[in-house]
Amino acid sequence: ALWARIGPSHVACDVLDEQTSKCGIPLDLPPGVYPVSVSNERLQYSNQEGELTVYPNPSVVQVSPSILVPIRGGHSLLTIAGLNFNENLPMKCIFDEVEVSAEITSKSSMTCLIPSIEILDAAAQSEKAFVNIAAGFEQTSVWTKHMPIQNPPWLDLISPTSGPLSGG
Image (cartoon, rainbow, N blue to C red; front, side, top):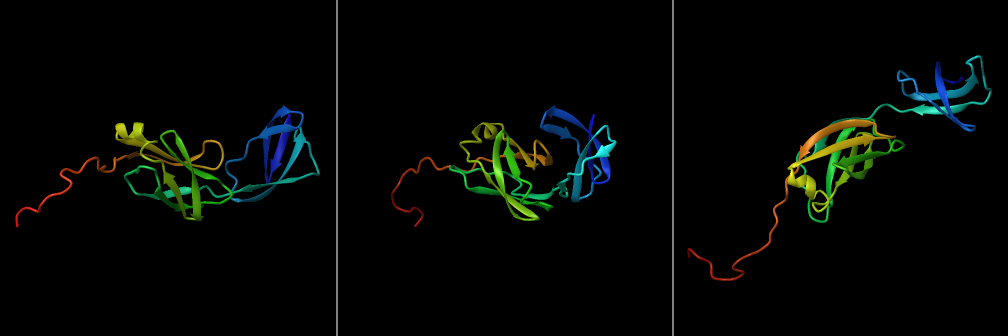
């Protein structure tokens, strides 16, 4: 069996092919940089080492606005305040099934462009949109919430288009 030593921890690895193995990461590792080496049967570890950087988990504190109001053509922003946002850990927002990359503006703030009303129209019909803020790799979620969608007012017709003021 193949093993990896990640800092002070030893973890079993699955061999995927001759050049690739998949190893678990100990969940109790605090943030930091750890040396990584591999071994057969956990007896003697290689002299070659790599590095693994563990970042603090991001968390969401507040989202604004609290009701989504998508507009035609888009360009509304969802602002997310939180902790431990990291430019090296890609973040995204998911509005129902629509994924949008997040722009990290600081370690405590990021923004996502709310998709246009045309894209979210099906969700708007049910008056609920499922908004999921996902962090980093694979499907790691740091915040999940059902948020109502309000269709913005839309002007279709002005009638009459001219005439005298009344009430004089």
